Length: 407
Image (cartoon, rainbow, N blue to C red; front, side):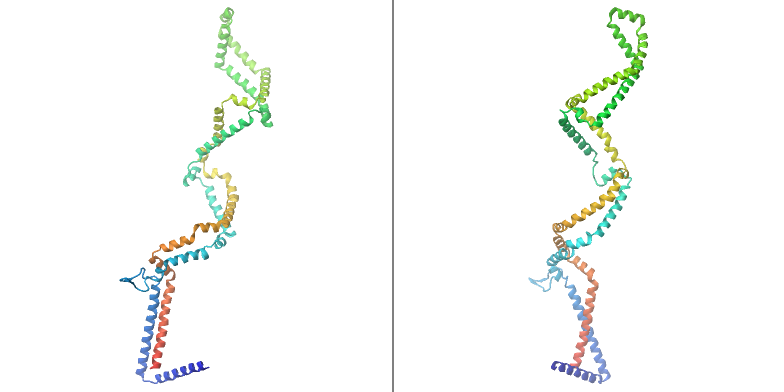
């Protein structure tokens, strides 16, 4: 109550003095108005200047200033003086509040982002799968050498190891025991084909000029071993005449059904005998090196890596497109998300973001740091300056009124 009474009395006194002032002469009122304006302008200038100076002193001077050995107070500016602490605190803020494992998971490792990434990869893969550039050209873009020599070496090594393994495993077993039943049936059916082939080739040979010449040589050699009788027959008939008669008979013999039946029977008997061979005997027919070279050559012909690498990527990768786009990419993105979810904290820890931020901020020139902060908050700093001027003007006005009331 007492405090309220004091305030009321002070207000009443001010009002009475103001009325007395208003009753003064006109020139007195003008002096009073000028005084108030001057006080307001001075207060505004002081308020704006001090706020502007305070903002500049956040950064300047960049380095400590000395008079002799005495360091001038407030130098360097606040931020240059506390730059190391600022860098450390920024690093902690980034790690503890901005780039946390949970915030990254919530922002990036969610179903929406997974679908977006999957769709983007599928769209980009479509461009790759339709490329007309060769497989070699695409490998060259990634500075990858042609894999053909490596694949061929690996393939040759694999064939050699498999050959040695099979040879060691089956050398004491027979062909009949180890070959699949369907293979044996197919080989049995090939006996007749082989018979036809041998007889057809024999007929073609003996029907040719080379075959006829061979018949004449054989007849001549035959008569040479028969002494005088052979010479007499040879003189009477002549080699060429006898050869002309023998050649059709040989061809007729080869084309006879009985000849075919005999040859097929012989081949089947031999084939049945071969079935009971041990693989050790079968491998001894040819040298290991010859067989390996033949197998490796057949494999190279079948694969033909050099030709495959020259094919357009769209053609070479066409069989894989559907599986890659519809299954591999979505599954790969899902697996990557799961792995990142499990290892993100460990990954961030190894990245040591706090130290990276600290080093970067600590390495900034103070002028650059000033430009960075002012670039973000220049408008707010101007408002602080204007607010200082406004408050200074208001304070100047109250001071002028107070002076008038006291005077």
